[in-house]
Image (cartoon, one colour):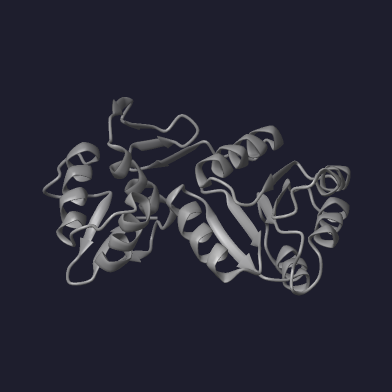
Length: 224
């Protein structure tokens, strides 16, 4: 099961880009923009990690961190433009597990998120479905005990499916994911090509797929 992340950020561009990237890395993401929304959601749902900006249009990241520390056993990472020494020390003194200054590199963020989750004992390193095992810490894929070697883009697409098990993914949605990962123009036929390549590696019978199924005229679905 994917790790669930609460993202508290009031910049819509950062939220959109970070949500997309984290989902390709196998995380489930819920995003809110203010303190009251964050505290309400924490009461309603369980999360494995909180990503938290300090300066919010409504409320304060410090206030959310204090509430998390007082009421929940959830690691907190500050993700903020306040990178001065006093702000960093204040964040750690408040109980933050890590402090990352903007701008940040998405890959470094994910690496530090996983490190925090491992230390907290909350990392779900291995996901299994249909005899397929994906270890997101080692970036290793095996099928019935045999290691499968995927290209970087194939692996990322597989993570998109794992993060959306049971959900229909249309061609356009997958194309957007590929575009965001590669950073370059991608021909629409690329989706079909990559799905075919992935199936050849992970399915027992690629002509009769059981893991990534085609929903004719609509897209693809990985069973939950």
